[in-house]
Every structure is written in structure tokens, then in C-alpha cells.
Length: 395
Image (cartoon, rainbow, N blue to C red):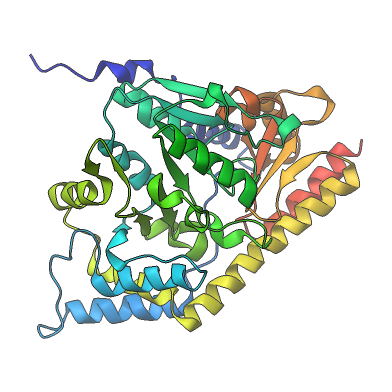
């Protein structure tokens, strides 16, 4: 008899975003005349940049021409794109070899797949509040998870300690959901800690393009010592609007080894065994992201979302409500007013002013009493949501 993976039974009954979708669906069924202002799930709303669209069209035309047609792509990524991404790092002072870059179908996929590199007996550290998939992917694998609380007393930025001893350490900076960012000194402490204990950092850099403070590293590899203890996972979803297009990249240094095994070589074997590579069309679009014109256009889109953040922050400042993020990250982590719980405040906003956020409790126990707002909506919807919150919460 085929036995199912019993660890799926250890998962929480309802995934955070599924629960939100069900609540909003029921609300609209009961109030068909209402319109929702969605600032919950962090999906982008602006279309892909013109340079990217032009490259995608060109790639489609290539596939219609026998002389230019491309079939299977290299499993680890097309050489020109790997080189282009490595150059992107070099311009920021991070020296990478082209084959230390792996093209992926996005950070979410990669964060799950990368766990193949670690024995199931490995202990995993998750700093909470955290992206729920960090926990769920390891629950599915049956790994022991250490939940390291990070509350507002420390700015949601924990320092390494004996309580953080684990084999795999998740760090997300800028953080989802809190918007908190580790500075160089704080990241150096974690790199030194990982090297001292032979741990490996999984560094989620999905939001690096939103950093505007020079004291905040865009990459873990800006920190001395990271090449012997870190893997970096990046995404073009929020950087360039690829949420529906799916493209990202992962950096694994050739100097990363444990127990006589090389993680770069292991990932090459993993990819060549488990994938046939990302499609030619998508990689052609990815190349355009890193072109001079592509960079100009996606920076303009990011500025649009940053302006949304500024609108929300001005409103919360006027209300005198505590919040985090918004400046170096596309999320605003708001403290629920009047001592409300996360889901209580979610329901209050939904029912009273039709604004949808993401309850902080869904990101771990330390998230209780907070709600996350995404700034990826339209400017018009963000402005209206801000007005409604100002009116409701001024009472």
C-alpha cells in the first residue's frame, strides 16, 4: 500500500491567504453592491515594463522561425542571463562567477526546492513573524523547526544567540511581513554565527530593489564571510512585475561546502535531474529587465509603489498609529488600534470600510496585534483606502 506523507497532517488547517480569500468571497456574496480595496496579498498591479514586453514578443517570434527556434534550455539557466545577473551583482561590488547564478521559476518555488540540499534531520530556524511557506515547507518534510520570536521591542530584528542554534537559518531582508531591514553590522553578526556553527543561511532577497537606504545591504554577499555560509534567493516578481510570468534566480557560491560536499555542485545535479530549465521566452524577458532601459522602467514602477507607501504612511502618521516598513520595503506593518487582535481588526476593516489587509497572526505568534498592508495596489485604490481608514479610525 502506498503511504502518504503523514507530515501533511501536521500543517495548519487553513493557509493564511486561502482563509483571507474565503472571508472576502463570503463578504462579497452577502454584499454584492460593495467594492473591496485589496491591500492584502502582495500581487503587483502595474503591467510589465515596455522593454520586457518587447523582448517577450521577440522571443515568441523566435519560436515561430525555424532558424531562431529554441527548444530545451540549459537546466541551470541560459549562459547570457546568468552572466547578466552576475554583472548586476558586480556593479554593486559583489564578485560572482557566472555559474554561481542559477535561473529559477521564482523565489517561492526555489525556497521549497532548495530544501532538497539538506538532510531531513536538519534543524531549521525561522524568525517570526515570517512568510508562512518557510514553516509549511519544512513541516511537510518533517523537519524540526525552531521558532525565534522577534517582536517590536527589538524592531523585529533578532540577534544571534544560543536560542538560534540550527542547521538552516532563514533570513528575509527587507522582511516580509514587517518591512524590517538588517543593517551591515546586524547581518555580519549572523554570518559570523553561521560560520562558527557550520550553519547555512537561506537569504530571501525578494524585495532588495525597494531598498533606498545605503546602510542596508541588497545582498548577503556584501558581507564578508557570507560565501562560506549563505545561499541567496531572489525574485523578479516584485522587482519587475513577474508575479504572473515567474522568473527568479539563486546564488550558490562554489566555496559553500559542508561534510565534504559542495552545494553549488549539488544544486547543478539537482536542477539537471529535476527540471528542464525555465522557458526561453521568459529568460529573454528576464534579460530585458537588466538592460539599461529595462532598469529605468522598472525603477519607475517601483517608485509608483513607493508613492503608495507614502500615502499610507502619511495617513497612519496623522492617526498617530505605530507602524513599521514602508520605506525600504513594499509592506507596511501596522499595529492594530485599541488593542484589537489581528483577525478582529481584519474583520473590522472589511465590514466597515471594505479594506482588506493581511492579519499579522498568520505570520506567527509575534504577529498577533498587527496587520500587513501591501503597497502594490493602484494609486487610486490606495488613496481611497487611506481616506476610508482616516475617517474610520479618527472616530
